[in-house]
Length: 218
Image (cartoon, helix red, strand yellow):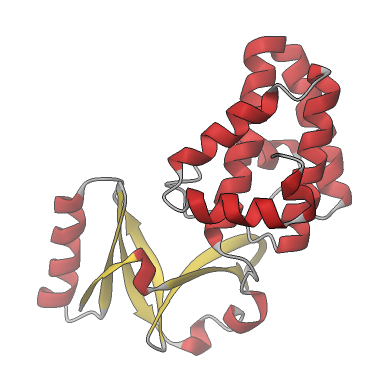
């Protein structure tokens, strides 16, 4: 049906009605709603083959989404099949959540590499306590947090649906913890460098420079 670029569409994470701890990625394009069917990484040929099979042979209404190093196929669903779309859409772009995840992961990896696994484990416990108190989605236990720390934010469709208040709070806490563990702000450079992997890095940097907790990373 369509081959689209990331700037053509809006992708939001919505709450799964059957599992409140799970977020479902939903793509919206020209008033139509699509749900993720399959992710192919950078394998465009496989994505194209599935898209063509669904559209040409099975008559399905589908979207092939082309992103940097990522191709995915989405199938159209009716709005009444995703009743939480309008009420749970994130108030910030997914790229801002991706950026904050990259920064958090960079700090964690620096602690693990430079201070050792024991300190890294302590950092995870401190971070978990903060996230439980702040009621961060998808981070209510250690296993869930470890999953968030290990995903690739650039390729994962299971990006948490955190709003701007959550992101500001997270930026402040990760900076505070990093300063506590290292005794200085040496961790900031690698965290900011991690952002360069994101196609929307300039947008994230601009957002950081104009937000209260983002400025402390400058």
